[in-house]
Length: 177
Image (cartoon, rainbow, N blue to C red; front, side):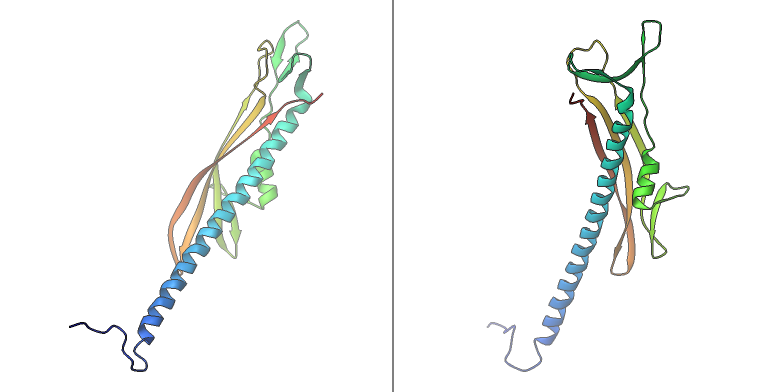
């Protein structure tokens, strides 16, 4: 004998509908939190890209323009017939702080919103790859930035463990003329 799940009496489906609505509401909250994390990560990555491009462009004045050889590098003549390397790592934290409105704390640079920490940026790593003057073809004058992003995760009013990620971005300078 089968047991009927839905009977024809009024009001018996209300608990099932309520449970479905609550599950859908929780699913919506989870998707909204994921979207918040994704938007924050994209915004920080775009700001880091802007900062690394600015760093590469700031090194423009020290780049030896060897258009005929087809490569660029950060070198300058020292006056004795030799060349010295000239690289400026720039102020990536300063540019990120200005662009994103961050404040410097002991944990790193953090963004606050409504009195709560929205995210924390720390562990900045800037590497500049300079071409050698006698290297032949150019690999490009490249700046690579890695930064650690920590975003507190909230779900249904509770604070969960933070989402941690490392963002990587790079820029390459190649002279056109």
